[in-house]
Image 1 (cartoon, one colour):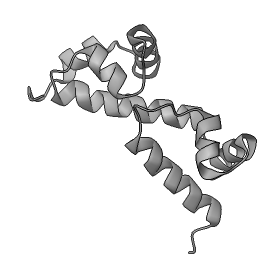
Image 2: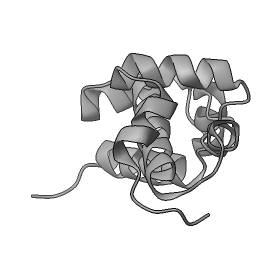
Image 3: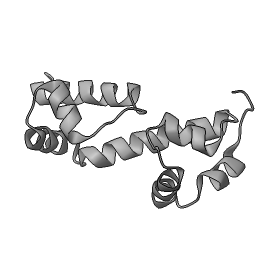
Length: 116
């Protein structure tokens, strides 16, 4: 089965997002990066993946944060910044909404290593 052009674009977009979680990942910025109209990029992402681009970005950030919480001793503030949140309170709210527990609780239940 051949991979469609929109699917290739979305794969590239996902790779870019995962490599740049700490950056400004607004729809406008991503669309500009790819030279697309923001509405078109948003619609294409939803058609290919079935989820909104903003939801994908949020999930990617939280998944990376979960790994940092498990495997490092970085503070919640450091982790929030590493995944693109300047406001630790906002990060904690988004984390709790997605995972059902706070970042601190997640760390306490899932701590694996102690390396930085």
